[in-house]
Image (cartoon, rainbow, N blue to C red; front, top):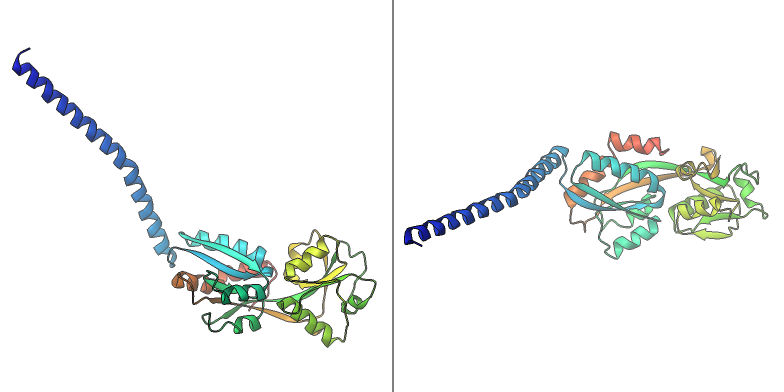
Length: 273
């Protein structure tokens, strides 16, 4: 074989290899370019929402469980790039978590007393909703509970929240005001625990928030308590100073007081702040 032919074959081989490398490089760059395009779109959407992208953890009173899930979905839809994780429990449990330094960005309690006890850990709170109590009974109200004084019947199994729980404190307040002595079969750590006892038939009646009874309307009946004998629960919301997403947390807390969130809360039965 002549030297010229050999040189031609080597040159052709080099060109072929270079072409293959170029094709491979281009193929690899296509998906990367697509990812860059998506990221740019996401950034623009987040900027347009008026709030920075973030992953927020919100500690919220148990009575907000259903409505906050709806609110969280609405907030994420209107604030692309923000994702919210809720942790629901009795307000006293949430306060303990804050004092222990649990990682979270915002707090919403079912009373101002609990929030006021955390002044060193929170921003300035704002009440976002109010609520009232009702008597929850089994479906169809089989024990014919008509008013608060019926809860004093020794033949009735009544369950209340523990006194350190906001709804338990409100319950004690209204019962004491009417001089009604109730001996509960159990004292629960949250309003949802009280409701569950009634739903399961482990109690004949219990004092819960109006919104909790409404959320379980297919399982329990709600006996209204006159306003003159009732208590008004207030729900303050605040950012947490330990948050690593201060701006995004403040945006969410501010949104809770706005028209979109207020409509969601009031549609669920909560009262205006």
